[in-house]
Length: 125
Image: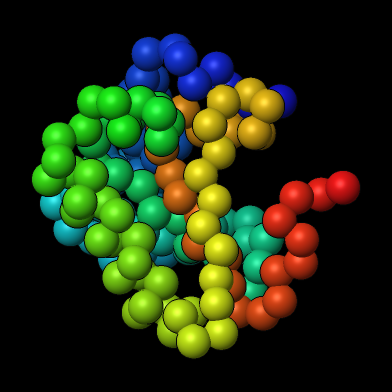
């Protein structure tokens, strides 16, 4: 069951709490625009989440409301994290779920970086 990505931002979501330092994470990257950390339930040998530091529910919300500096900073952070994790040569996958049908469960934009081995088909059949 996913969330409705058109709803207002919920400051109580788990990623907001991580950003405020209320919950721990295994951080791999942080700057003014993004925070990246290991997923607590990895779906691949390497599974890192990258979240913007701003209050954005989804990619749709972010692409509509974020400043050009926030967008550029976040996209650059995703690339930096993948390079720093050594994923470029063998390849990696990016995934950003938006809304119910995609399976988005946390109402804060997050990009999954998967890598470290063969990832299989893009979608379950």
